[in-house]
Length: 215
Image 1: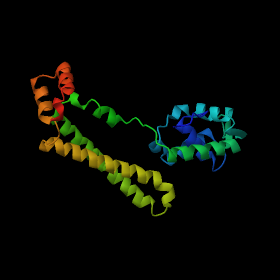
Image 2: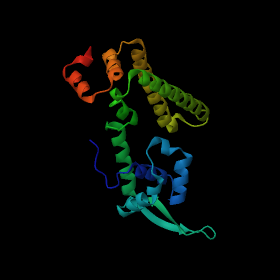
Image 3: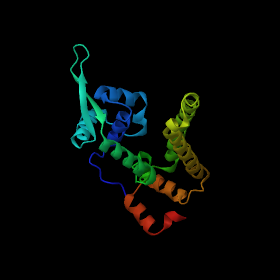
């Protein structure tokens, strides 16, 4: 079970990891995270960076070590990670690697109400998804090959995992689509017939309760 943290936004994890290298001001933190594509690794709301940094300082995970001014721009506060911040970063990383946690996936949400659409439309939509997945997989593999020529695997492991998950999703989605296409998906004929006759939620519920969709 995930530990309740004083600053639980995953952006805080990224900020702590970035400042683990050296002190920076907020603008440099943001540009470093963007350059490294961290917004692909976690759901980053860039507008909340100011608040996250403020909260990390409030709880003693960061401290102010100075400021700098670049021409006429406003003064920029420089932060560095503290010993408690390093401990929090290490503990949080251990938790994320060792423990499973339910994750909300948009595709899963769509699958949970799949029956609202007729099977033939689902076949077409899954085909579209598979094409997109294949493009993302090709792009990810290319990136790993090119960047991997000069960057140690340790620093690309999250990208490797991302590609592996895309490949797994593509395999599963192809298999589901194939079952719908060849008619081996359980209950697909009844599913198709219900839509042909006019979708009736009450009738669908009755069929489910009667176990008719298992055949």
